[in-house]
Image 1: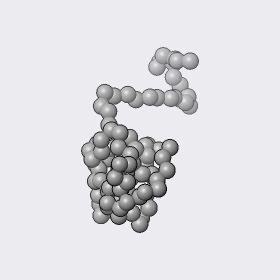
Image 2: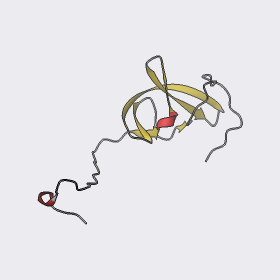
Image 3: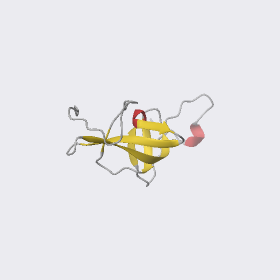
Image 4: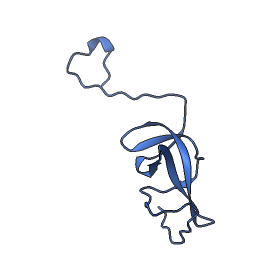
Length: 98
């Protein structure tokens, strides 16, 4: 049920959805790695079976999703919870995809 603003009273609970015209790529928060004051996301190239560390600039985030302003392209495969043992250009032949 939607009520006019003048009918809201102290103690009421309000649900609010904010929309804007800007669109950016969203990735899981767990995909972002911070090293030396820079932010990175690990991507996977299925054809080459290799991983790549890509520097990204970040926007807003919530508990689950992080906005990526630059560094990624739509459709790239990214890795959630990347291993601290990953090396840029490393070959990963046996990756499982959802």
